[in-house]
Length: 234
Ligand code: TMP
Ligand code: ASP
Image (cartoon, rainbow, N blue to C red; front, top):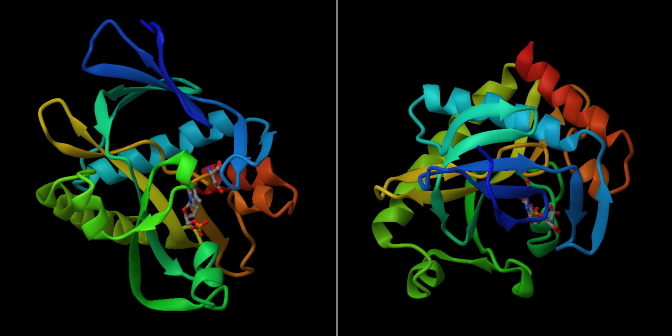
């Protein structure tokens, strides 16, 4: 079923299948931060991120969000619809953390009056710079109709995920998602939603349960990813 490697990113690989409309996504244990400057392996991360993404994409799909996911094939592999990924990192921030605390001098932990929608241009050579809607449209990274759809879906995803994580005692601080276009032109959620791509804080203690444990050398990284999966599966 799994054929040649089509693409390798920092944390995943994409393989062709005999069906050109389907690919296999394989989750690695490799971890990077600061645009690849810091590199390591997080034991079991691939398995945990595949399982967490499986839980969340299934939940979102059940609530009307179209996704690229077809089914989980093994601990680290998912069968997905082939999509053309928009070269955009779509970010939502509910609570201040990470880059925005420096860029706008907002104290970490400040809850924003409304969710902040951000776009970054996915380009490693440029370090994924922050851009606005006009940049994305002027550079032809996405069409106006597709961008409206991405925004609508992203705000709906934020509401659904905030609710899902609140149920298990976790604040969804911020997250990054990616969208793609299927061969029939539909815009769908793609890539992953995991502790690599979100910030999760335990509500009672503000304990960080995400990749910031790796970025900031806080220790117990795998345990944090395990904790997220366990709560979602409880
Ligand atoms: P930031 O505060 O570093 O800009 O990150 C915002 C969110 O996006 C956070 O949940 C982590 C996630 N993220 C990624 O998934 N990939 C990245 O390359 C970066 C920089 C952030
Ligand atoms: N994924 C990004 C990198 O490789 C950054 C991050 O997640 O902090 O470097």
